[in-house]
Image (tube, rainbow, N blue to C red; front, top):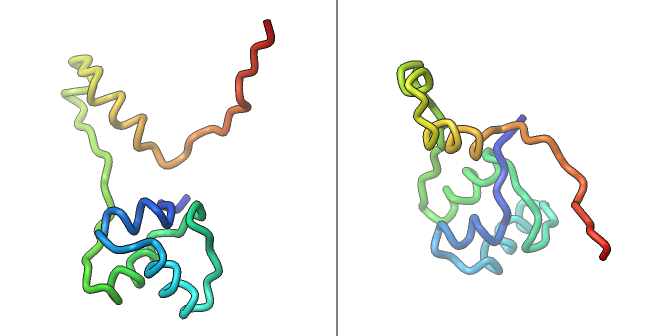
Length: 94
């Protein structure tokens, strides 16, 4: 699975207007909306056009912190997991 980021979030992190990011994507023949997700390679190419460097976040945890029961480290690793199971929404009718 590849890491993805929404166009809006990508623009915010670079400090550029989302319209400028969408324009650069359109110049590269990639049609997206503000809520669309782009993969890491595409984001790296677009960031290069803006003169911004992009790196992947690596979620790592050592065995010692896991065995000691460092709950925050386990939760942070789970939050950044690449493969999350899609769940249907929970609807309650009263």
